[in-house]
Image (cartoon, rainbow, N blue to C red; front, side, top):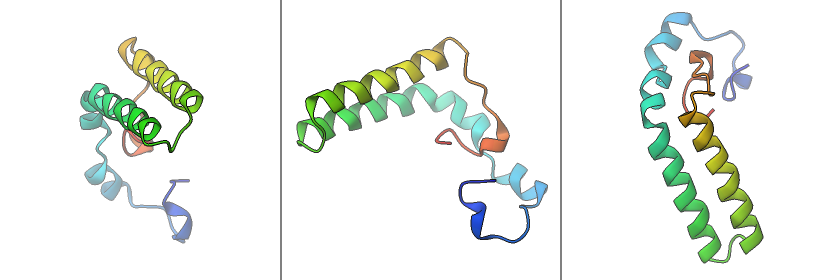
Length: 85
């Protein structure tokens, strides 16, 4: 089930899924998306919305995702719709 699909009675038409899928493009943007997520986590820490420990944990986790992308360990599945899924 798609994250946003719970309110619909029927599955999305395959043609619509193919037309709206962005994962093939998003895969090329993964390093930049991850860099933005790291910067965002650090800023949340600077603003006091995350503790220093939370900030470190979050940055470390996102760095693990970045490294998995770099090693080619992440499968970009069109069923996931976009990079954020």
